[in-house]
Length: 357
Ligand code: NAD
Ligand code: TDX
Image 1: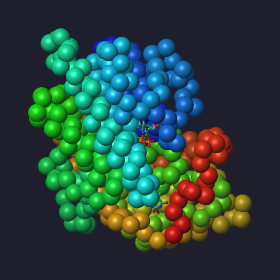
Image 2 (image 1 turned 30 degrees about the horizontal axis):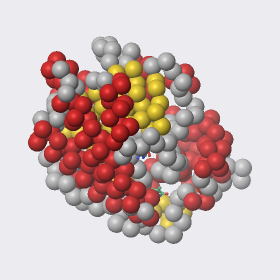
Image 3 (image 1 turned 90 degrees about the vertical axis):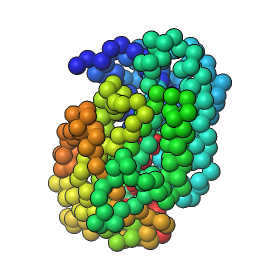
Image 4 (image 1 turned 90 degrees about the horizontal axis):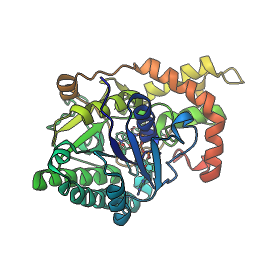
């Protein structure tokens, strides 16, 4: 079903998930995208193909904490929806420097909500009832599961354990409070670990691929027994569009593939794909480069997601298996490896990627 034309304000659209989402929106709908992004190290304006520049995609460089700018954008563009993705998103960085996480994830969300509420309250009734604020949270706000625990569901109590997840939880509580207190039409989406094209190579999968391409060791934290539920970004974007179109106001939706995988198993799968597609010059398997390093402090052991609400209410299903998704992701990074190296050199050195403690 083709979505009706509308204007949507997207924050953080130059990052990994945001750029995939905007490309998906521009290709599958006729919506206008107003895109607010501070263009931090994680924001990237290259390699968008026909999607940037694009006549229906307008980028405004600015920070979500800038209330005057947000007010002006809302007034000028009169969006029918806001999708809030802007965040500091990397757990290791939050351990090394939490302050910016509080600023962007908590204060930024509070400023955005304040402006969005004012804007929404002054809309005419017909537009007011159609307006939506879709907030991207994470599965990490629910803490860490033991091996026998049931997967996280919408009813799981919050128990964030890293500075990153604590700031995301705080943001979620603000969104929930806006809905409860003012009737603000928000929806919260909690996705599991995403992977796919355009992910900044500080996260496990792209980091490991680039390390292999460089002939460097691949850091595996602790004993590698931690478990994640890997979700292809394409399946996440499909879920977000369904939730925006048909999701229940005030609800939260958990989005996961259901495919739980230990980190050491995931790295083995990646190494095997790289052996096929980009074998090492010395003929050794890439797996020999996996190196156990000191664990992440407070490392969450297991995340697992029960997506039944999304599946039952909105009929969503993941389309991409982990095997196929990893293969496509390896292909993408093999094509774009030199491109990333250039970006990394411009703003960041590879030595700072991957903890080697
Ligand atoms: P990312 O780090 O790749 O991108 C973040 C984007 O936000 C960048 O474009 C950056 O420039 C922008 N940004 C950062 N601070 C900003 C500010 N103060 N004002 C405006 N823009 C700012 O993040 P991602 O992986 O694409 O994640 C997007 C959202 O999804 C985040 O809210 C994250 O918490 C959530 N999430 C991510 C995952 C995942 O696996 N990556 C899983 C679940 C939820
Ligand atoms: O070098 C590494 N070695 C390693 O063993 C890195 C970078 C990670 N790891 C481990 C830590 C985790 O158990 O791999 C797992 C995945 O790590 P990340 O890619 O850093 O993701 P994670 O910490 O699980 O968080 C991600 O998923 C939820 C995203 O970064 C968050 O933004 C999202 O909310």
